[in-house]
Image (cartoon, rainbow, N blue to C red):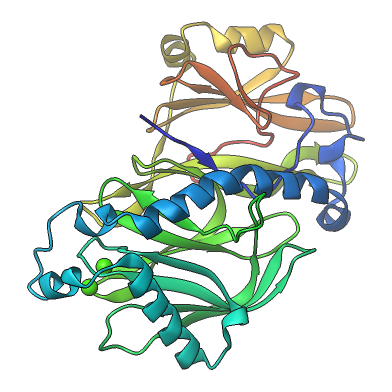
Length: 357
Ligand SMILES: [Ca+2]
Ligand SMILES: [Ca+2]
C-alpha cells in the first residue's frame, strides 16, 4: 500500500494556464512577486494538513524498533552489542543531550529532533536544529546538528533560516523521510517566501552525508519516489517588455536508488505526438490544437509521466503551459491536483518542461 505525504510548503494556487491573463496571479512582475504572491494562510494550511501524517511518522520512528532491525540484520560486528541497548527513547535522549552539550544550548533551543536508524545498521542517529523559532513566520533560525557514533563528537552541519511547522495538535513536525529500500533522510528547507529549497541528509559510514540540495519538497513515497518542485519565472513572455513574467512551480521526479546509494532524477525523453496518443490513450496533441493552442515539445518522464508543452499567443504576450498525464494512475496532473480529464482552464503547472531540466 502506498502512502504519499504532501509536504509542499508553498500553498499557492495558480490560475489555470488556459485562462491565464496578463493581470492574473501569474503575471505579477518579478520584483513584486516575492512579496505579493504568497498567501500566508495557504501556507499555514498546507503545513497543518501535512503535519498529522508527519507526526505519525515521528511516532513510528521513535517507538518501533523495526527501523533498527529491518534490512540486513545487524551485520556489522559492532552493531550487535549496541542493538541490545537500543531503546529508541533512551538513545534519542542521549543523542539530544550530546547535541546540547556540544552546541552549548539549553533544551528550549532544541528543535526538530529527528531520531532514526538512518542507514539501518542497528545504531540510532539524530539530526536536530538548535536555534530560535519565529512561530508567526513559521521559521527557525539556527544550526543543524548531527549526533551518531558515541565515539565521535556531534557535528554542526549548516546554519540558516529554515521552515518550521507545528501539527494541528501543536507538536513540531519532524522532517523524516523513510524509504523502504533501506535508508532514511532528514530534510531541512531554507525559508523563503516563495520557495523552500531543501537539503536531504542521511548517514553513510557513521558520518552525516548530504544526498541532495536544491528544489522544494513536494511529496515522497516509501517506495523511494520524491517529487521535487522547481520554481521559476517562465509563465508569460511579455512582448512589450521583452521579458518573462509569472512565477511557476513545476514538479520534477526523483527516486532513491539503493545500488547507487543516491537520489537520482528520472530522465526525460522527447516523444512524438503519436507516442503521446499511445501513452495517454487519446490524441492529446490534436485536442490542444483544436483548442486553438500551439503544441511545443512533448516529453516522457521515466517514472511514467507525459508532458505536452503548449503556448497561447496574443498580440501582447505568449503564455507557456503544459498538459501532464500520469500513465500509472491515468490522471492528469496540475497545480490544483489530479483530474480525470484535461481542460485548458484547469490543468498544467505553467511554464515549459525541458529535457535539460
Ligand atoms: Ca544507523
Ligand atoms: Ca553505525
